[in-house]
Length: 325
Image (cartoon, rainbow, N blue to C red; front, top):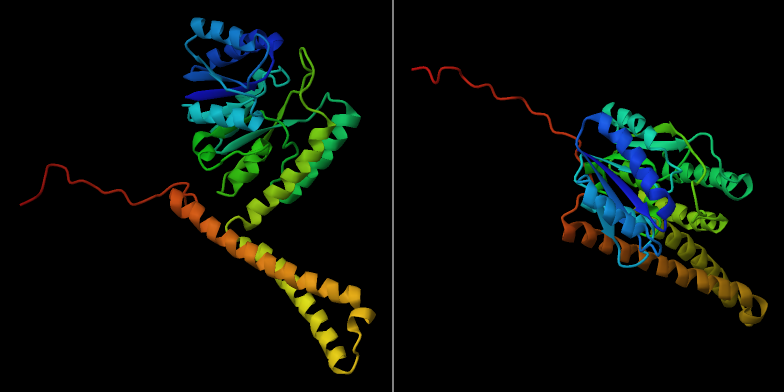
């Protein structure tokens, strides 16, 4: 079964056209499918249009959130309700062409766990979207270790079991391939069409690019130090404590050598040494707390730090005709 998850927010002008194009693409595939629209508290007639469509098509399901939680939360709600073996996420503003769905499915059929769309020819404003996006994508690729050229697009196909290992918070939906790669997911990139919005204004601006930088730091930490936070905080703590201790020992040596006014001669250095020493101890403490929280997270939820792709055993052969006497 195939599930199409579409988060929307005030997309009234695009809904009917998107539905018609989706149906025209999905019907010829001759496979069971469902379309899940997640209404992220729209203030226009989007929900009314969707409820009317549900009455005429049993493939549709509409999920209405109580307030505007954001795209990651809307996608998470759709993923949770999806019943398909393959889940495709896409935007509801017609910037993603439903006609590209077969290309994404073809990569999944080849054995990949995630087929990620790549807007090879972008139609966005070069100054406010294209250039910042290229910089952000380059940083994301370096931070995550996933060689993708377009992290920002929502248009992706996933095997359902991959999404079970991924929890979305904040605006981390663009990092699903990187988060899934933590558990060994295989990712492929598929060129897709990028068209201008059919109507309305984009919900994204250059300010969003700056918020992405914080997500990059978050994903770098999660991928590298999630199961061993002490390796990150301990290193910083060791550096701070070591340097602060050296400064304080050097100052103490000078004091013992007869320099009575250390605070006057080396006051700023003494303060720096004390701050480094205390900061290092705080980093060590943070690392220890992180280790305990990580263990609590995995053990309390029964989660594992690994994911099994498949288990192969030797098949047992039965004896035809029953046992021999």
